[in-house]
Image 1 (cartoon, rainbow, N blue to C red):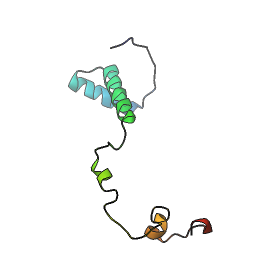
Image 2 (cartoon, rainbow, N blue to C red):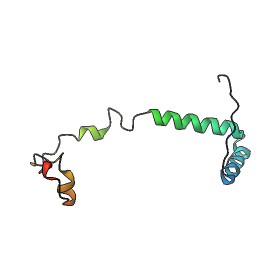
Image 3 (tube, helix red, strand yellow):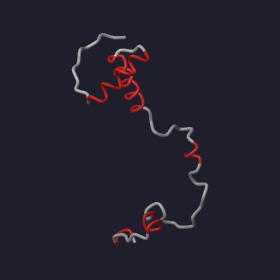
Image 4 (cartoon, rainbow, N blue to C red):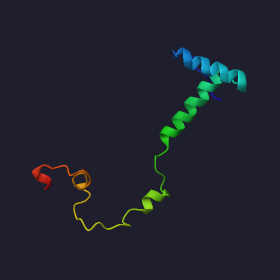
Length: 88
């Protein structure tokens, strides 16, 4: 691991208790658990929510509604909400 920088943070008592219990069960220090959790969090945040090969993308264009303005007025068709005159 690279150079460590000492950082102080405040954690809720219940979270520290949970980390201590996990530490006893797994043999990991609180610092190790926090580093692992932060690394996982930052890794997940940098990955796109949808991957290019996601099946959701394959649905695009599969169904033809016959409604030409469905993309612009989807709320109207789903919820019968009225729109400003500019969109009508």
